[in-house]
Length: 67
Image (cartoon, rainbow, N blue to C red; front, side):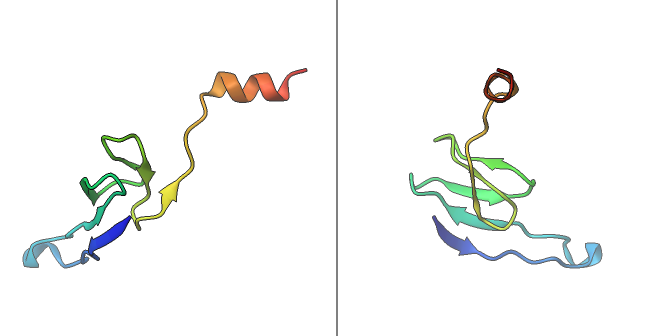
């Protein structure tokens, strides 16, 4: 992952918020608007550009907890 733009938080009358932009390892540029941002290659990043662990479906978690 490479940071393209750090983004800015500005007053609405000055154009509002500009999102952080990163380049994923796959080469796709991704604007980070939400708390979870998914690249077309299926990697997830948070709003600050940190890579998130893969999501595990809840039924898989329940199987691990339930004997």
